[in-house]
Each structure stands twice: as C-alpha cells, then as structure tokens.
Amino acid sequence: MDKEVWEKLKSTIGHLKELDLPTTGWELSDVIDLKDDDWDCDYEDCELCGHEIRYVHVMTNEKFGVDDLRVGCVCAANMEALGKEIEYSVILDKHRQKEQLLRDRAYFMNLKFKHSGPMKLYLEYKGYTAFVVNDSFGRNNKGYYIKRKDHIVCGLKWIDEFGNKLFTELAIKKAIYSALLQLLRV
Image 1: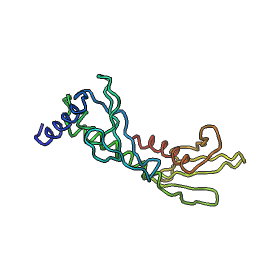
Image 2: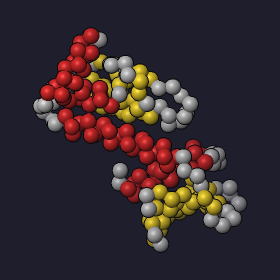
Image 3: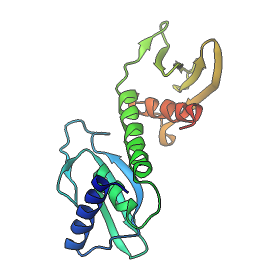
Image 4: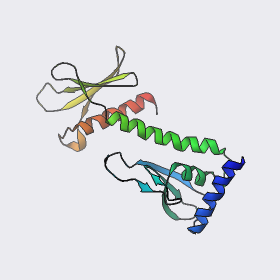
C-alpha cells in the first residue's frame, strides 16, 4: 500500500476512534443523491470528516451492531478498505461508480420529452428511444415501448402508478428509466 493511501486510512482510523466506533467491518448499504427529488436541498456534512457532501454513502457495521454512518465517497472507501485485503483503488472505484449511476439517473430525469405526432412523446437515451403513448380505448392509460434503431427491444408496457391513474411526468420517466437499466444491464 502506498504512503498516500496509508495516510488517508490513518486519518479515517483516527476519526473513527474519536467517535468511539470500530475501525473494521464497515460495508456500503446504500448511496443517496440528496438532489434526487429536490434540487434546492442543502448538502449534508460527512459524519466522519465533516466535509459537505451531495452523495451520501450509508455505511453499516453489523459485526459490531453500530447504527448507520452517513459519509462521503472517500470516507466510505476508506472505511470499507480497513481490515480488507482488497486493493484500495478497486474499493474507491466501486463507490465512484455508484455515484455515477445517480448522476446518470438525475440526467435522465431532467430530459425533456419531444413530440412525435399529436399523441406520442419520446425520449432518447444512450442509443435507445422510449415512446410514450396514450391508450386508444378511452381507459386513460399511458404506456411506453422502447426501440433501438428500428427494432423494438421492449414491447408496450402500461404504466399504472400504485393502482391509480395518476400519470405524472416523473412517474412515467421512472418507469422508463427502470426498463432502460435492465436493457443496459446496469
């Protein structure tokens, strides 16, 4: 392990000991984008080092029965690396990839629908085109299908958010994004 990495880990060990927390056994349980639902929200402070963070890495330590700790990317990678024989850069990359997925989702949710004909909307994302259609039988349903080039890769799926007929743009985008993640195998 190089000297720079060791210095970061020593600092993390010091912060954990100051808080009377274990120095090993930490695992990532979730990553949260604070701006996911509210672009005007404030950032949080990392509970370990105090830096302001947007992407909250929720760390758990079931081995020692410690409540979750909400930290930033680097602190999370440091905590997970302690007591493990895994290369530090591999752990840090894993945490950064989780943040990238959240950035991709935020980007997708901010895409604007384009019009294709009088009753059809569409979005383009990473080589796929998702079309939103209205039910022509008067049931007030909305659905989507996804194409890649000229081939349908996800057939028509009706959107029924929580059993009611509330079709917000956000609900439709969430349904499409979920299907796209499966197609992209993320």
